[in-house]
Length: 263
DNA sequence: GCCCAGGGAATCG
DNA sequence: CGATTCCATGGG
Image 1 (cartoon, rainbow, N blue to C red):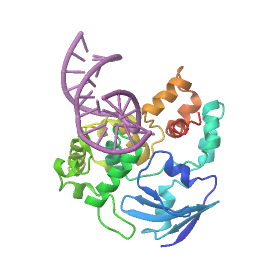
Image 2 (cartoon, chains in turn green, orange, cyan):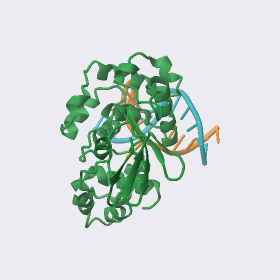
Image 3 (cartoon, rainbow, N blue to C red):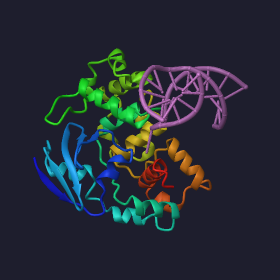
Image 4 (cartoon, rainbow, N blue to C red):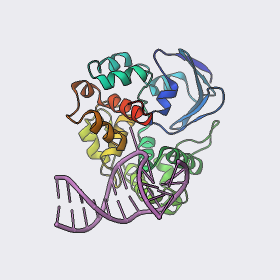
């Protein structure tokens, strides 16, 4: 399928590179191959137009995935009065928090534990190639049903390392619905965290990433090493009221700003 | 050889 | 409770 979505104050590049998602690849001439769950497309931004080709799914899916129905101009204006967030909001106003698939987000951020982004991307790509289903642009992200067929030894072949046992436990609990991922929408951060942290290997950080990136709960605020550094540097007296108006986006701006050495 | 990466569990005081 | 240590792997 081929179509176009008109966008305003949006940056495909910043949205993809700001560290929230892992399954995309720059091809040529500004095009990206983008995967989300079992869907995929070729996508390219030309000014205020987002062009899709070879999409496996209609434009409603991507409209939702990119969160285009949410007013981000308003969210960024929440930060007025906080000098750091103001500066970041101006530079990175094109960022959107994606609405990713909860299971894909869960497994991806388990893989992210004490790991770096290029390696996380590699492992996830291998995981899809090994255990996903082939489609016209590549491979789907394997479902819990599919991953249920494999064990520690299979995952270790992908160099997942000590995280393999965490994935096995996550697949078990999701498949058995002891942790029912469909029930976590619209829960408070604390309640959702309580559920997700039943999984061996899922702590505060991974849980809040799933709640933010998989359930689009803007109150979730994952704290990794970069956010820790940013908080020490700029918020040693605690978060500002502006920060607390949208912790999810504030956190994403700080992460991207720190990694880019922009702040 | 060292240190680090979108951390978490186990152990110890 | 907080602090420390171990966990696999690859890049710098």
